[in-house]
Length: 252
Ligand code: PGA
Image 1 (cartoon, protein in one colour):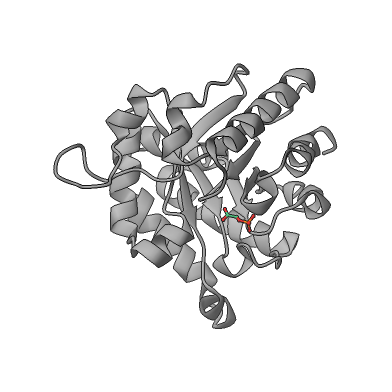
Image 2: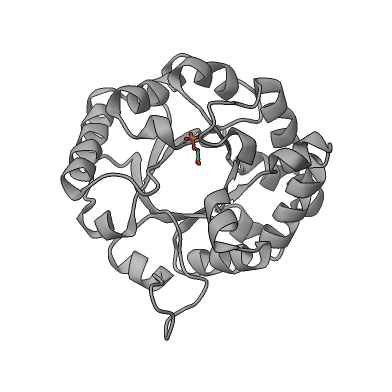
């Protein structure tokens, strides 16, 4: 059985006291309610060193990582640095990085490779923009993103990657893909991996859905056979919504 995962992406939100208190609330929620899924929080770089959690099912991720090992890259944070403050993994290739920082699939592939080299778990984000969806190109767009960023990896390496399908038109917009739309793309991604690496590898990889997931729609989406959880922005910023999302897996 592949892992079910509820992952939060805090983006550029929260002060240090706010970040500490939300992390402590999530940690204690998981301690007192035996969660049926793994929980990940992607938090700003500046809080990572202070992000100490107790429960083994709660993992702390960065929201990005440098594609370079070290050197003259002002403002960048390397895999080695993240490892040295005990970070578990990194969200890589989020659509906001693609859009505002012009990250390419090649760069995203390099980031995934270096994360794996340092023992960090990558969450690889893919997903089409609205124009591409309207033109019926979403399957092709996601195929190309996945092939370029992931298919240079070995079977052993790709097995350590978490994928997050996030249609850009559904991020922060309140508009969610229907559970059927999520399922068909997730199945598509899994079949691409099966064609390249075999069914066993494809069946072992967790594929999360992201884009306006909230307590009211999570159960329907997470119940689809190829959806293994969610990458959540807005609803990850308060304990009531985020704990309800974690709890979804007690009801499926
Ligand atoms: P959202 O963000 O849940 O606020 O739509 C999702 C994401 O960007 O990962």
